[in-house]
Image (tube, rainbow, N blue to C red):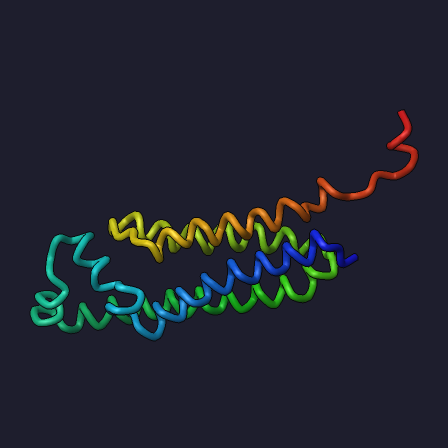
Length: 158
């Protein structure tokens, strides 16, 4: 059943997860600045220069970049799966898709937020993560299967 409420929810979820996917792509492809700014996160967290690390311990710097790139790739993978689920099963009204998007986004978005909070690097782009998750939650609230399910006629009569 494809209602106007569900249509708007699909759009909201896709927009929110597209934002997360974009962040993951930046982390995977351009982890330094400009880009995902993992280097600035390192500097805020350690109070040390990224340049000093990369000159003093290039293998450590390379490893940190690799880990951040892999994390970004996982976020891209989640974003692609979430958008696909939203455009297919969620759009059809499959209850499992609703729960999958709720749980998946509740794990994926806060992991990026936790990184930002841990390194003390919150800017306008990082603040958009909160907006993206709120948009997704709004789309999920208006389509919650337990809130909008039709009651059997016998239960409606009291």
